[in-house]
Amino acid sequence: MSPKNVGTFAAADCSEEYVFKEDNLTVRFFAKLKDEHIAVRYKVQGCSVAIVMCSILSEKAKTCSVQKLAALEFATVFDDIRGGLEQGQELCAKKVFDSFMDFIKKC
Image: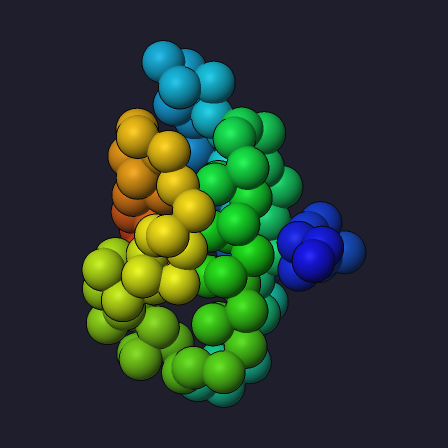
């Protein structure tokens, strides 16, 4: 399976970069807003879990209103990938999730 929604928008309505130097993780989100919905794309440098979380979260954005998206909980999203993770990867997933939620609130 390939990551979904990787890249940018030609004219994003908002964008934000999150850098976690201690984890060698950088995530940049881009959004286009239309009515009560948001389309999200991203660029990420980091572990495979970061890529998977960005892909899952950007796909969820396609099916939710901004209000519903802002109410997501980490445990609900994380359950989708929990089974195949190594120790310590949950922290990376949580950082990506928290960054995404912060981004959604800023948009």
